[in-house]
Amino acid sequence: MSENKGEIKKMMIILSKATLENVYAAFVLANGARMEGIDSEIFFTFFGLEAVHKKKNANLHIATVGNPAMHIPTMVGGLPGMEALATTMMKKEMAKIDMPEIPEFLEILSDSGVRMWACKLAMDMFHYKKEDLFEGVEEVITVGDFYKKSEGEGVHMLFI
Image (cartoon, rainbow, N blue to C red):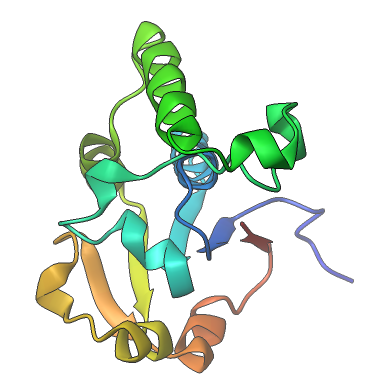
């Protein structure tokens, strides 16, 4: 019988999409874990890599098409300028509550001890180099490597 009693010791977050709302969700959860003394790691895969791509992460957008939480018809969400408008509005609201922009939030995460990994398969697929990424990304690893880092009791995995 385990002595762990369900204690969360580590959060392993997989970020697969770099929409503004998904990136902030992953970052807030990772930061919150660290604030509670829980180890936290983020594995950036597929389009989630844009969250740590130095030339792309400051220009992430809100998804307006296919996002039921937007409460607008898909056809309207797809109109030219809607994504930019929604993104501008969301960024203004986040600024009101002192939410850091993505590049600054990455620094906060790194400084707090959140470990960050990039997916080798996605890096190869998009022809990214390690130099393209935020310096806090420790290493480019395979999915198997990520699973090995997830071993142990009290580890929770979250896919965003």
